[in-house]
Length: 177
Length: 131
Image (cartoon, rainbow over all chains, first blue to last red; front, side, top):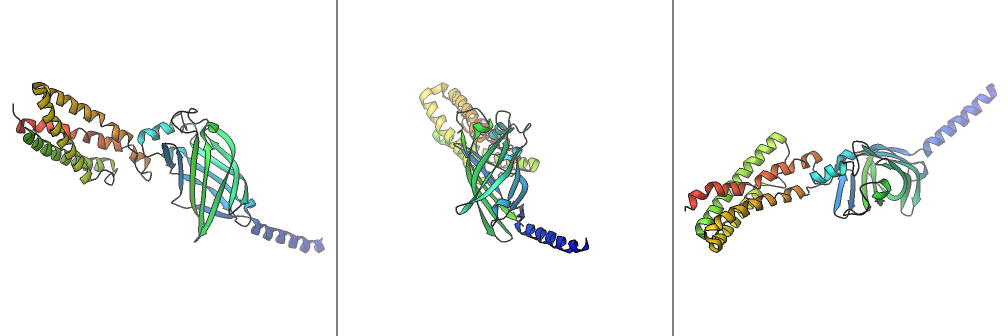
């Protein structure tokens, strides 16, 4: 038994230390993030973002994004539009107070990366894939992504009308270690 | 006639501007919502003066065309324009950097100001134009 103890311990330590190299770096979301949306004449931002980000640019497969956006923090710059956006006709902030995104897969794609994950919005969970970049800087870096979301996929508003079906999302999230 | 109307327009416009600035200060102290970068002192004075001078031109023209009924029609139009102009602050899009709770307070500050030029005009008119 004693003969096996040291080899097993060595294997466990080696495996454990190797795992620490594989595990992605945890990042904190820093101030100054921007989550902007635009669809024709309608546009605005969400002011509150929370979540956990683990990212390794050398090994993106080990990365994980689990973020939530507070629906009530929507700001279109106009009080009537804010109220309308939070109503049950659109985001229904009272019933679905957050937009939740959890990544399932992160891969390298060209000069940037591509993430696939579940977007839970307005009570509808749907898998989406979008590209993003990560620019290192200082004690962290900044994630940037621009992609489209079809509001009809999430039963937001009525199809057609004055508001475009495709919403362009521009996300910029500075992070620190 | 136009000279008197223009004087009335300028004085009532200035008075409306001063009232607007005082109202903005009171509104800020009560609600702590600062809109001075969007609706500053100069903008309030300029907009009020614009309203007063426009009223002077309208008053003169309507009195010329409609004679005795000119003033009645003018008063109606001035009040209706003041009401219709409320759509502007209601539809106005503020900078997205502003807090959404402050955004909701913006119409409450600007809407009363839209009536100040008309109030100033109706208040001071007897002093400038006597029948």
